[in-house]
Every structure is written in C-alpha cells, then in structure tokens.
Length: 152
Image 1 (tube, rainbow, N blue to C red):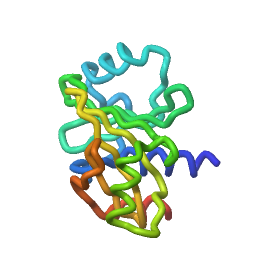
Image 2 (image 1 turned 90 degrees about the vertical axis):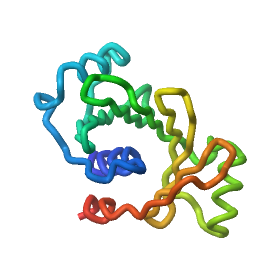
Image 3 (image 1 turned 180 degrees about the horizontal axis):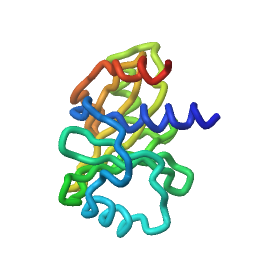
Image 4 (image 1 turned 90 degrees about the horizontal axis):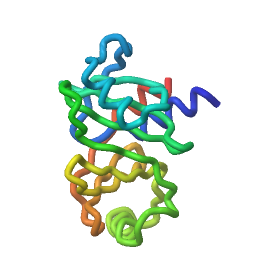
C-alpha cells in the first residue's frame, strides 16, 4: 500500500516542464524553501523532496489530499498541484478529454494553480499527461517515461 501511495504521489506531481526531477534529502533543500513551506503548511510533514531543474518540489498529504508545491530556490511559490477525483473535474475538462481521447478514461487527474492564480488541469491517459486550460482547451501533452521507471 505504501509503495502504491508513493508511486501515486510521484506520478501526480510530475508536471509539464519539470521532467528532470531528482529526489533530494531535506538537508539539501535551501532553508528559504523549507521556511516558505512551513509558513504555508506549519503542521505538515513533507513525504518527499525533489529538485526539478533549479526548483524544489514538496510532496505531501494535505487534509488527506495528495498535494505538491513547487518553489524556486529563494522560496517563492511557483505552483500548487492537488489530486482530484475524475468526478471532481469541471465539465469543460471532461469534454476536452473526450474530444481528444474518445473512449479513454483518465487514470489520474489534478488541478494545478500557479502563483498568479491561473488554473489548469492535468489528466493522465495511457502514460501521457495532458494539460488543459480551465476552459478544456488542450495546452500541452507529454509522454511520461519516468512512470515506467517508477513501476519497477
């Protein structure tokens, strides 16, 4: 069960543009990043830290919802990603998925909010991450090769 949870969190938190993520020890995360995290989530324990290019990602459960936050090295929030049940997706996103992948179901879905408040949605279908704007328009798609590695 724990391995499945770790895999799910890892898969959920892999976002477009951050393909080179590497696990890092908490001791190697800058204090500015850890301080920013603790200020926003004072009682939450990070399950996994990753470095994605120059940024740092914290993976954790927030009120039993799998969540990731990405900070730059100075501790500035870049984005927050929360897991959503498929039934929680807005209808525009469901319609967008159906339009590009008829007869396919999303395996995992999430809501991504950047630092300015702009919302997008991610749906994983057949090991490909599809990113939609809040109106259901496809923004990007990316094959996720790391998912295959994580399953080993």
